[in-house]
Length: 218
Image (cartoon, rainbow, N blue to C red; front, side, top):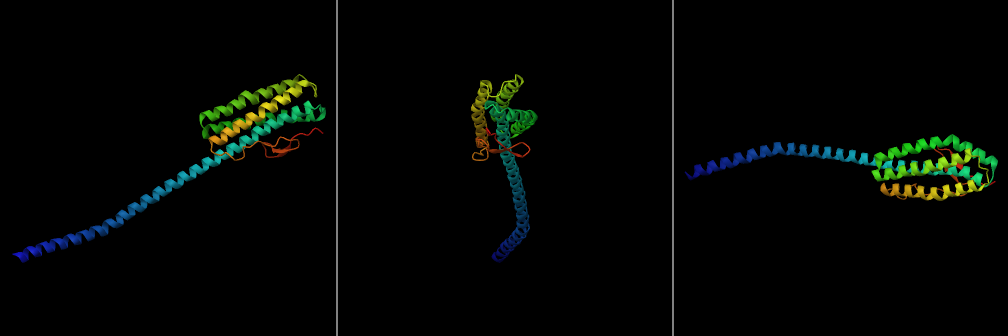
């Protein structure tokens, strides 16, 4: 009797062991395959998110560089007009005005396009601050500059001198503030948003990439 019970228990244990071994042999590859597949999918999601973030950062850096080049370029384009007018250089004043008259709408269009791109890459407050620079200041000094020319203010007059000083004194800090705020918002401080060299003869890039120089008195 005892032997029969022992044999029955032995066979049951043996069957359980065989079943466990068989089940383990089946489940382990299945579980491993599931885990490998899950790891692969998670890795792909991570890589896709990393690539998306990299593209966003590249777009943000390009936005900052574009706006820096455009805002400073437009300011310097206008200062060339008022500079020669202030110092009474009639010939260079007319050339500078003609250049400004030909290029100002290109600058306006490119700046507005860059600010529109900022809507997708920055918070509403940053976009609003950039629009304020565009609407409240650039449009204002463009109107003042155009009116001064249409009124045929004499180069060397106090009117041109005051306009030049105002555009310089207001423009430099406003652009600095706008670009610094954008760089800090995008966590790109220390990139190419620094102030440009505003000394006579210094070079800067126009919207088409061509280098040009700041005016000199001569």
